[in-house]
Length: 304
Image (cartoon, rainbow, N blue to C red; front, top):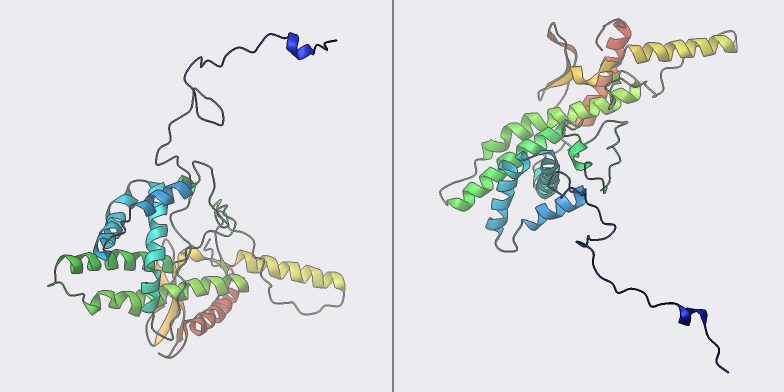
């Protein structure tokens, strides 16, 4: 007795014959746009930039760094972000070694507080690298970029000719004036936001509310009076905060001040003395204390 299975009665499947061009996985698509340097994900573009370095002599790698600085990063926005990532990570140790005590440094780029790129990680989105902000809120980042442009040129020229000597005064202005001044500006921004006297624009262009604690008002006769006084103090501190974009720092070995720039004029609103041995953090704290008094005396400064 023979038992017949239903599958044995079915006809065999047709042979596998390609009806047209086979598309790679995941799915065939006739409207697929070929990738370009602009549409590549950031991690792939960064990998391509790293592959431009040869494993040979150091002189050849310095020429690649010179090419990244002078040519490749100027192609488009995505390549600028990738090249600056490589250049900043390469020259950051040399930059930090030239910081003289008691000065400190923190040139790492900082995004806007509520920007979607503040916690940016490598994304598979093809446009994510082209949407990254080029300008950092950290003002010392600009000093690092100037150092990179100068250092790359000096290294290549020294490799090309033994007659070229790196001049010590080439970096003097950067680390005697520009670096400590930019560092104080970043510290004033951080301390000023904490005290509620400096506002930083958000990614949408608006000024966020100051969430740092403000001075507590005096106790009233009732709890409702305390709440009213507290809300009034917070509102006044928020509206009187100075925008960071309108502020800069004047720096010298003996004095440091905050300069307010408006459409009408540029003027120094606060200035404090300092010594050569004084840290930049202490100078920034003194400036913020003076700024707090200036904002309290000028609540209607109309600088927004």
